[in-house]
Image (cartoon, rainbow, N blue to C red; front, side, top):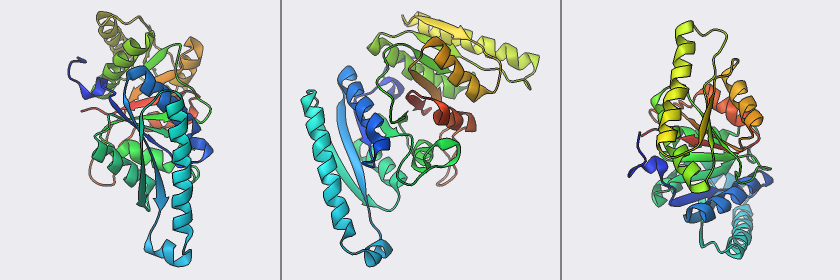
Length: 282
């Protein structure tokens, strides 16, 4: 693993995707703080829902929605500039938030998408918004999911690993974040009751390997191998060690519709009180 010329360790252009609801408040707050910390370029986007059926049923509402979106973005610009942040804004039109967010990130060549955990369309399984699940599944860049009450991390980073290359990608990004923010890292790999002795050994080897990676990169690190359901163990360990951001990998995507985000990752996102950085493997 190396941070040299790696897009996994680069946060130069950050896209904050918002639906203008209260669920986006944390994403906007943390996105701005991260931009200041990394010296990144900030783009804030929202979407105006539009399709022929919608327009025929409710003529004029699309225009009202666009005016409201512009007013929201104007306030966001004012808040960003008050912190000395240069910001661009973007309004996309479409019927599916996930499609517009992923498309915008591709057009902008964004390194990171920041978004709230829930949205106007309500809840999907495990308390994670449907758009969040689909954006993580289809985006090529990493995604930072921020609960509405969460703030910028200041204490400790927790990295979850299962020993896979997806976890290695997460560690690469976590090292970058740790060095920029000057924070220590805790590496955790959970063992479940169903795991064999060989699998338990692999968990210990996985955290030891990543611990060496962080230490060699000059990052203060410790390790934990808790026993229990993996998602619950990761979230509980984050609370125990005082971590205020969780970094994890995901399976990425295949095809046009099939999402391969692991169920453990989805449950971590649904339960965590802090931001969760989901890193996409190259």
